[in-house]
Image (tube, rainbow, N blue to C red; front, top):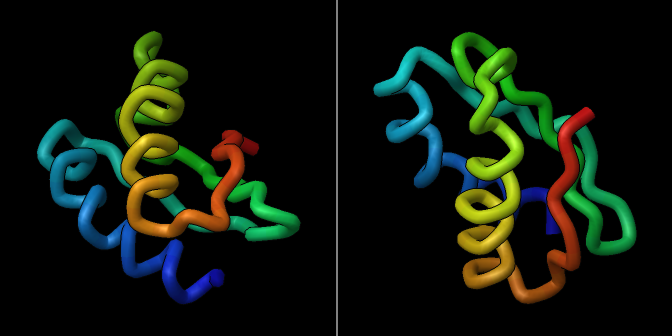
Length: 72
């Protein structure tokens, strides 16, 4: 499952990088994906919305085993 999540994140990365940020996969366990937002995304006030409304939705669509995405 970790490989599938990483593949999905590769599709998301260009949009984050265009805004000066990025995402790193920290862990995948029991359907919970732990990521770290870096660069401009790390301190962005919209990071929670990006995480939940963007990344989580895309990851759930592409990897049905994903239950939640959390920032660590």
